[in-house]
Image (cartoon, rainbow, N blue to C red; front, side):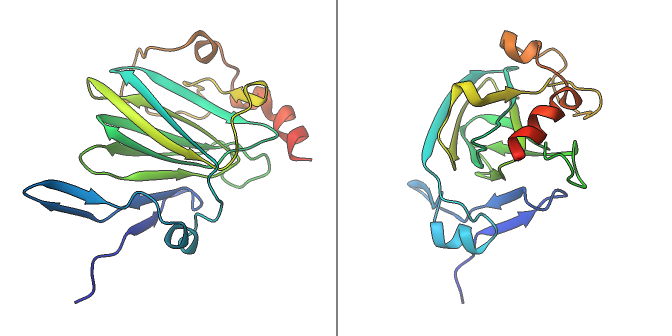
Length: 189
C-alpha cells in the first residue's frame, strides 16, 4: 500500500491552492512535512521561497489586506498555533477573477496551508484566543513597496467572521481596491 500523499486542492481562484499535508500521529505527538520543493512545484506552487515570517496575534486581530507592487510576493501561509480565517483576493487588473476572494481556515489542528500567488492581496483574522502564523515568501519584504487594500472594501465583500477587528491604523484607512488600480497597472508594465 502506498503511503498517503499531500493533497493540493485548487480553490475557486485556481492559482490559490489549499495544501493538506500528511500528518503522522502516534502516542508521542505528530510529524509532518511543511515544505518539499519538488512536490510543491509539481503541484502548482512553482516559485522558490526566499524569506520566512512569523507573527503572533490575539483574537480579533486582522492583518491585511497587503501586497507589494514591484516585488510581488507569493506566500505559503500556515497557523502553527491557533486558528485563522485566511483570505486571498485577486488584485491583477485584467484578470477575469479580479476582485474575487477565497478563504481557508488554517489551524494548528488541521495543519493546512494556503498558497497565495503573486498578484493577490492577502490578509487574515485570528479566530482563536491567540495565533502564531508562519509564512514563506517568494520575494523579500520591501516596506516602501507595500500596498494595502481596505479590509472591508464593499466591492470585494469579504465575509469576515469578526465584525469589529483589531486593526493597525494603515489597515483601517487603506484605500479600496478600485482606487489603487492605476498603481497596479503601472507596476505591471
